[in-house]
Length: 337
Image 1 (cartoon, rainbow, N blue to C red):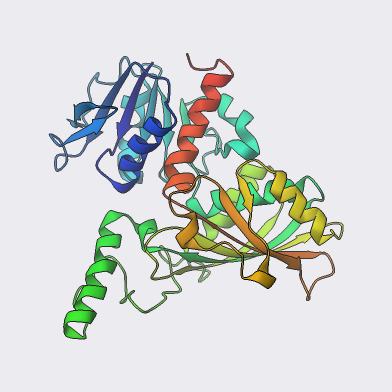
Image 2: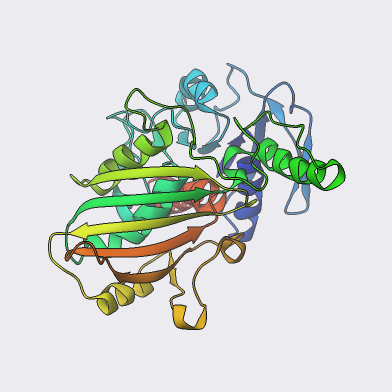
């Protein structure tokens, strides 16, 4: 099997390399692609050095079986035909194709079977906040249909990429050394010692694109009429996102039953002993594969409501790991050999 990574030099591209090595992904060869800026860069994978090739409209993907793509929506749309024309499966991390009817939007713990129906040869990786939430919603949906969700996300700097992480670190450095932040490029405001209640651009409804992704993608992944109202906030942690989630189900659920269902669910780790200060935090979920869940309790404002807190590494499960798990499922069922 021959695998390609498009956008190999970015934060998610680098995570792809780590995860493919950690999970001993079955492959015979690896090809790295990037922009003019990153072409020629060299990265080590399992003791062998690989040089990044310039992504071009040519026949470089002729022998590729699976292409992991994380180079932005514009690049994905521009190169989709080039990547897939010889039969490669394109697993795309951008938002370019997520809501296209003929492109499956997949979280393996929730709707792995959707990945097998891909008329354009493309499988979309959902938004990171959506992935994390639906992994936890799945066992609850199996208990009783979820009607409504309210969610507030607390999203770290790394969700905006490696440049954003560097900017946050630079802002703290400037504050410590000079008492004033001078570097504000990636974010609309200073992020250090601050929170910014906007992620992505505003839509005409005053919900951001990030918040609308959570509404639309959740429905598509879960094949559900569920309605989600989200407020997405950038916080000054470096890595891992967190979410406070309020869930309304058709039938009232017992808290202990919900806890047990989450504890038994694929991709979830229950950390829920708040009386002894045990609950999930971004520092602990960074670098981990599972979504960590805690603070599970009855919603005092809704007799059919459950509320909980979750945190997860959005570069891993929220991006690279989810894509690799999709590929692993295709191999497991014999769809890709």
